[in-house]
Length: 64
Image: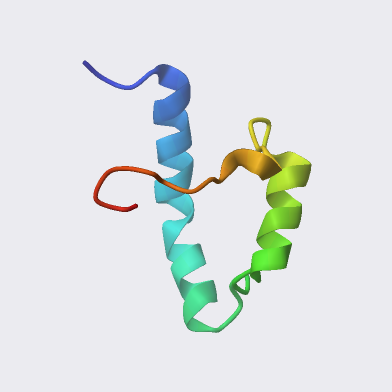
């Protein structure tokens, strides 16, 4: 099973722009890492499924 045509087009765009993005990163012209507050702001503003009350204590399992 392959990718959809739209997804293949997206992959081609990423592959075509990769050399330029790598050069920008090497030159220090990449996007700076967001702080936790900035991440929260961007997620709450732009992510369609974001819920601020989405995290809760795990009561069972290996990560409790």
